[in-house]
Length: 113
Image 1 (cartoon, rainbow, N blue to C red):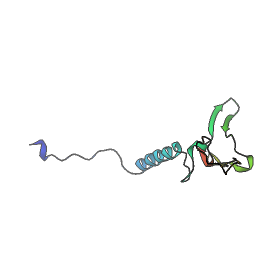
Image 2: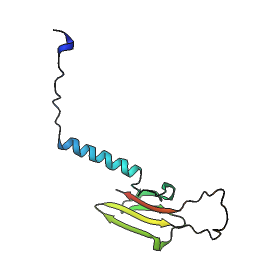
Image 3: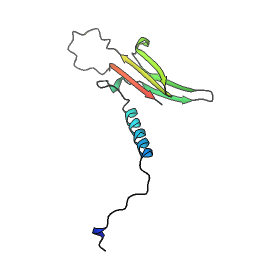
Image 4: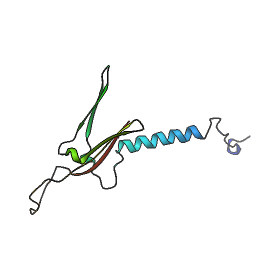
């Protein structure tokens, strides 16, 4: 019999719910890598995190220069830390024609599970 006429056999691996769960996990990881920001949010504004553990507790330190406490919302939902906030543009000289600005301003939303 020629190999051209043989049809491939179906895999014996189960297909269904485990595959869907694996796909959902990968999608979640992808969005976490991109910080799941709303459209138009600047990734440069994202707070940087340091995460450590001691015998007694876990510690999370977030670096958020220029973010006012009233512009920050910290919450925990479904075992996920959520940091939402905004870094406002504080430049007072808006009448200038700016040629180069390296500081970032905007809205951020950061999740850590």
